[in-house]
Length: 117
Image (cartoon, rainbow, N blue to C red; front, side, top):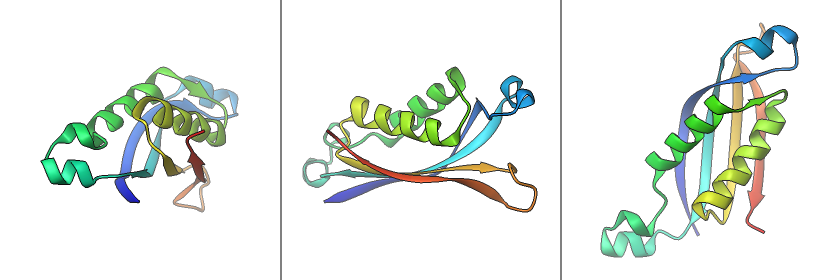
């Protein structure tokens, strides 16, 4: 199986468990590995036969801006569900990083893998 990659997608969202975090936008960085079959797209040179990474990026940017979460874990799970449901992804690996959340670390975050049901 093949993978479509999206690396370093930066989105702004309300995220965090502390009271002050519930009132500010913070940046998250996403890496996605999206399992699909790209043979038909390659054969026909046709975007409609593969994952449109621009559309996925736009949807995730909008989702992040429109939804607040307490935990990075919750955000990651909801993003995985959205990508599988709306874009027909068979399997994905998603890394979500929250830069600056811990002063002594460049970023903290989670990595999850999910498959279509």
